Image (cartoon, rainbow, N blue to C red; front, side, top):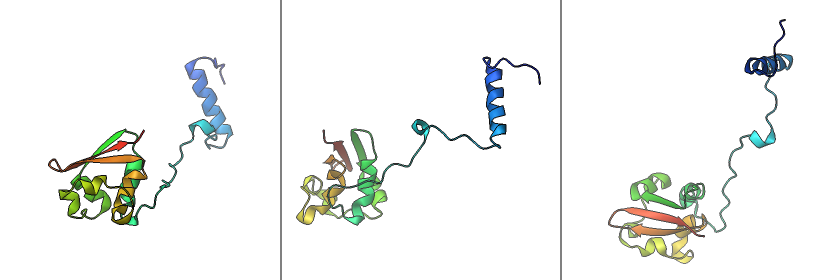
Length: 129
């Protein structure tokens, strides 16, 4: 084989191909800093009702400080339409978790507050600092 300068781009490629062939065509193990792993499963700090877990998971995995969702998007996440008070009463969104307001655990466990705009049919979920 002709001499190849291992400092040149072609030489570096040739060195990689040669190492790959010596390894039997298998990839070398990726360094730990480059490995891609699945995100950890969300661990709600409050008891999120199972029906509202998809909304919690969605909000918990968003990096944006504000997530704005339409009522239709929330319905698509949940798989069912929110109860009628959600469309008419802002208190349904801003109430504290506990008692009849267990649904609020979906965003409070994701460390967010809900700010509904009922006339626009949207809810802004803002991250709590």
